[in-house]
Amino acid sequence: MRKSIIRDINMAESGRRKIEWVKGYMPVLSAIEKEFIEEQPFAGKKIVMSIHLEAKTAYLSKVLKAGGAEVSVTGSNPLSTQDDVAAALAEDGLNVYAWHNATPEEYNRHLNAALDIGPHIVIDDGGDLVHLLHGERQELLPDIKGGCEEKTTGVLRLKAREREGLLKFPMIAVNDAYCKHLFDNRYGTGQSVWDGIMRTTNLIVAGKNVVVIGYGWCGKGVAMKAKGLGADVIVCEIDPIKAIEAYMDGFRVMSMDDAASIGDFFITVTGCKKVVTGKHYKAMKNGAVLANAGHFDVEIWKPDLESLSREKKIMRRNIMGYVMEDGRIINLLADGRLVNLAAGDGHPAEIMDMSFALQALSARYISLNKEKLENRVYKVPEEIDRKVADMKLKALGIRIDRLTKEQEEYLRGWGE
Image (tube, rainbow, N blue to C red; front, side, top):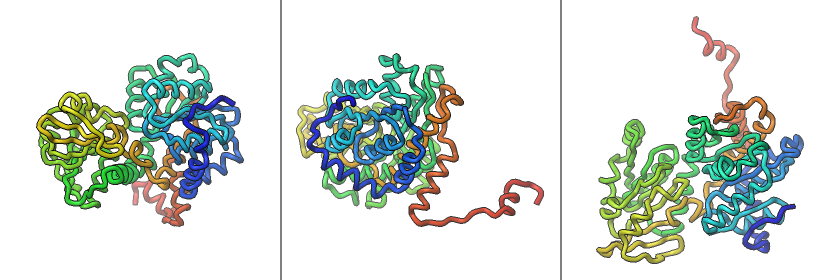
């Protein structure tokens, strides 16, 4: 067994309790684990994972191991790794390379160490592993059968590689599955972002002006939860159709330039860079709170915050206060990284039950169908998406109606 790189193996018991807790609320993944134990779809295969290393991810890695895989695990964000969970996995015989608050150099070393397993299947979150495999680790490409991508940001980069003819192996865009973006991106992000913000700031949301920047599925969830908490929600968008949708959903819609001076909370959910910049900081209220829910820490542009502030000071755990020249303080949460994971526990277990079920079944699909796949980005097969939905309904004890044969014929035909 390879030697793991973790902070402290003595933390394993705490991590094991966390994993057992979420497992109790992930019945779909538990059912898939039973299937995998019987089928052994990954026998002789090596899988590398780079996903936020916390309890729910840990359970996914254990399910893959139960299916016969040798699994190598690392994080996808230096601040989201939970050291006790990493220790629990290492003690259980998985290859683990991650610790909390890794420096950029350490983070890169952990990614490379995870790849040293010589993987056949890649499970990525944001594209760091794929980037390395297309760059400095190309010697590993001959053994790669394919992989799965968890995040919108990662899928965008995969599609860009595909357009340019540079993608070296097939990838399944798990993020684009209905059972992912309709639930994980909307309800999961909505709840976990506000969980991270509220536990970090200890401030009330009701009555505040909340500016949500980006109205994709994640932005919809953040805005919906803010409204439920009693906030006055403002949406900033670049897409005119999404802007009208936000308006019809009951939110104020305006440009970021106009919203900067009236917002109390600002949450970026765009997947783009330089969304909040110097001109916005100059207009913000004293005490404004900035949080990012996009994958990379480039949406809230920190170089401008640094250059405009005369000093910065730690206000609370995970809150850095930037003191402007006129004395105003602008508060940045979790260093501009994913607030729901860097300052919280991420999405609820019941939500990740579906997302990680998709990951597990998509990985099995790649393992069984490599010879049929080209080097491009694939949607999750519809039968996998529907299977996960059916399994979730069964776990919830919910029965739904089914079409009769007559109804099926009516919907297929044109004559009646």
